[in-house]
Image (tube, rainbow, N blue to C red; front, side, top):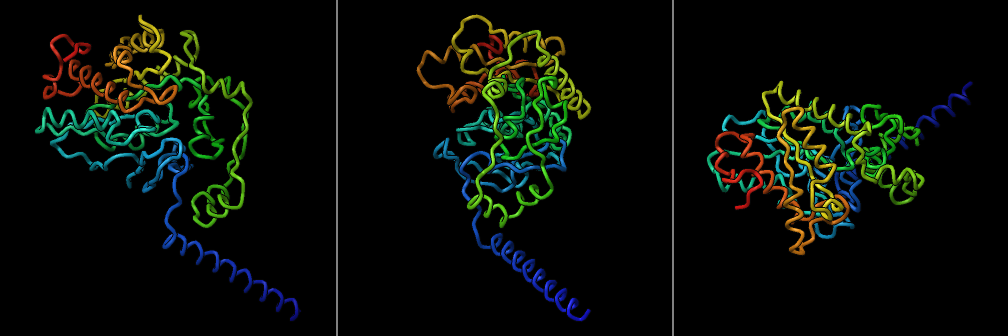
Length: 374
């Protein structure tokens, strides 16, 4: 018995020593090792199993993404790109909460060139006494479901006067690839409500364990994983990739009913807080080829009319600017800095003309209405 006890004591001391060494290593890394550089967008995100919106931007993250060159991404202490905003809102502010995905976030453009920041700067120049603020809650990979959950949990706490949701055509696609691409995690706990068409939902790819969640939060485990273990990426066949990437444009697809239902819930949340609701229907590159109204644009306008919402339609302005030769998109969906400028200008015209920014901004409405040029 004494021999067994001695072995147990020695084993316990070894285990205690290992645990102590690991704890000291973790502490040392947190104190002295600078955060690893951001090499792709996943480095900006964190898994949030405690939140209904599943994942978000990592507070304090900062870095450049190899795919977008010199663009610097800074995430503030609240977990969003751009300046922090006081909560509760000061009484002398007109505050707009912007919901959206990587378009609103500003993929491939500096933060000062994103449409929310351009809107804020333009309104500050026009109406310096009004105190307009645009709180950009855009998170890469989000769709209308994440945006709704984020609005309920966080957005309303900013006490907005207006909630502006940015639409992107990939909001209607299977979100799994978009979510996984942003987080490097297989988010198996996604509810059916997050899928525009749950019947097309793919099977679970990987079980998210508590150990993986812990590892994602540990500097030591993350360092070991990234330097000595291959990054694990979900494998999808080509049909699945196309399903997540190709636009859903059919008027009879269930995805459009899903989108309208999510927007109605957003509008109801906003209304209960005393805020208005508007939709920014961001175009995508293929829509610039035509001349007449595009089916996606027409459906969004009809959806807004049915529900009494203000909708911003910058597609005509994008088409007009296309002749100038300046690239308006950096890829299929994401606007360039020039695209953000157009979206900001059209959003200001439309919201001002609709009275969505209050009486102080009505003079920003041109004589010919929201589509008129200065």
